Length: 423
Ligand code: IMP
Image (cartoon, rainbow, N blue to C red):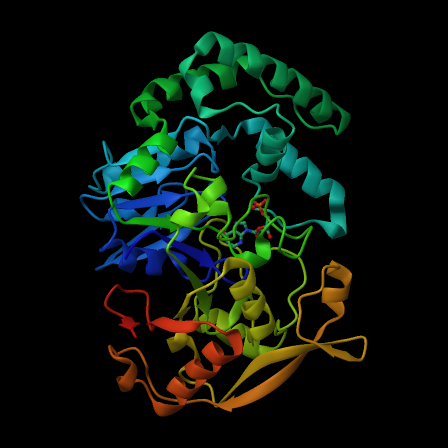
């Protein structure tokens, strides 16, 4: 398998959790490198369903090492809750989970600021998950953040925290929000720190050693390419580099040590939160995709916006991530449709374009140019080999790969592990 990065190639929720889960069998180490508990990776094992937010999906396999890298923003209360929840479901979490001492921490004041900023934006709100992710990354870049390593020196931690709470409370008061209590947060975090201590380590050194020893490392991207802070539909994005490059900055593994990049994309498109989405369907067709695909957010429960596959986005994704292989998920959701459309280009102000515009308002004005396909109108759920798929489904998948410009490697036809086709 070698060192592999797996990323979302659309707007997140592509079904990465399931693909990571099936690839984990061959991996020794699974690593999260960006984002935080804004992510929600759903994995179904037998009759059990797990939704992971911060803990890498490898935790569901015995004997795998799971690492939360330096690029992740960690809400320690949420992490502890997730660990407790997994343990209550008899998933072992002990020496198999490690957290980077350089990862930044998320605090209640980040969540408060996230809410205040969203309210202030009114109609231009981003539709964040309100987990405090943006403000936590803002503190990191402004060099005022607290990191996991700070939890290990209580006195210094409290001093820094006191300053941060005082500063945030000034903002809170200005916007009529209730100020936060330093004492409460400090007490809670120091108690959590004692519990998390065994998980904290220098993951950079460890990961590089494991990589040199020939261990198989799988980097688990969260969110998707179009939510990347640099490459996405800014400002309607998340605050981290969700693309493959983020794996290096977020873990300390050098770029030339990455062997392969896999992009996960749905056989159609979804998006949660606000922002441009050229192929969005506002009609019954959209509702049908939402119902059949059970398109409701794993973290916030919000209904996802649904639309046709967008090859402009997927080509862009292949380019910025250097995708070697594609994993197409949720093919079965299209099983009953008589006609299926794929966006092959955009029409922007009367001109045809095949690139993603930088200006978000220009992207809002993009009208998809569609190519229509006959649906296969048969179940794909039982197929375990590519040759077992209906002919029209194979043609559809081959067209997606051709339009996108990467090799089709995995097709998922259901949430369960066995509902997977390897090409
Ligand atoms: P934030 O990451 O909470 O700041 O939210 C910023 C944008 O990213 C919003 O549109 C969210 O809906 C979206 N977002 C964040 N995490 C995920 C995810 O895991 N899946 C899909 N969308 C996400």
